[in-house]
Image (cartoon, rainbow, N blue to C red):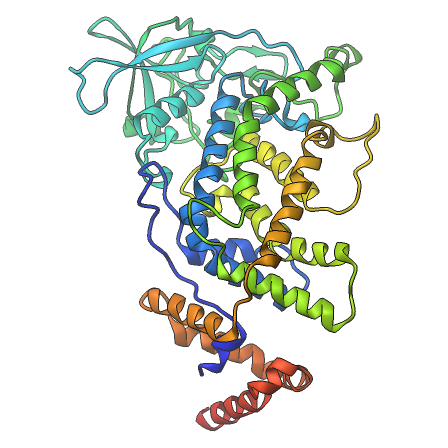
Length: 505
């Protein structure tokens, strides 16, 4: 059965947490691999290659690439939250993506709230910066970010399970909500409540407390008299996908909705009823392109640090992972074997093998690696960074014009520099000493030994056998025609395994 490990490396199960950082952790490797493999590929070999890199680059991701990736995520999140973010459309004042940029003028002010310490109400309050245009759920999220900054996202309380109290003196406590009987309705539009709506000012005292469950167990058809306290009307929340812009927005029950559309900062006119005057209120492209460039400048250092780490053969004294050198040498050998001397072709092979197959997925989806929440605006910004990463690996010249997308224009001056990093990276790898099959096999054996208790070998082998058995003829014919496979007599070993398994079954 050892034969299978010579063909593919499939060791899917959890690895230790990132012990150097208390604010985040790696997700189980099995989940990471499954998420990477969920991306569309054209062959089993491509999926196995992704699997192979996901396992063998885990140490490099943990010790080297993980930190600049996490710092980029944090920088994007912090920069986006400095300005208004529409919790319905996912658009923001600060963005790298034109599609997620608020183009209307939004008046807002930064507030510093004094938050009661949830562990000790007698201790001094701690400050939390919010915006007066934030919805109540957005305020709760920012407070949770401050309170639970050393806690994994999956283990911290959900904003939907907490109430935000505005405390006025020792006894007066007002529960703030996204929607209640004070919510403003104009025509068929209903606007979510914000701190501005409640007239919460700078340095007000607030507290995040567990939601009173008794208020939320009422039937959806319950009616509430207008005479009760204007701030005590409960609402019902609907759980959705964590990455959805609606996932943090409480939604009223359908019988209370009556077809009314909810909005926060800008009205979503996807319904086809946008008027000419409203279209005219959009800022011209030159204005918001300037804002995109300003955001890009703020994040530049973090993008550079990540790209430089991924395109470097030495990181913090750590050598290049053997898997990368071994695979790149294999691609060069195949090019020599088939008489392919065009360096652009070799460059493209290597780019498709590692940066575009593995690292792009990691950049776009840091939640595959860390226990974090990725909002829609963060996702949009990471997609721009990932597209820039892809463009940097291309050998073709990018011609820009007036109709070029803003994502291309943003990094137009940086891509030539990034391309030089990629070319230098590939050249440096090529100059490194070759790795023998013996050394690579020893490396794979060591990786298997380190995680021998973290996965079910027999289960993985059985899954691979099911595939090999189904396509045995094609696999044996391919192995008989391959020089390396002939040296290791792999075709004969496959036939032996199939025969032995057939007898046992």
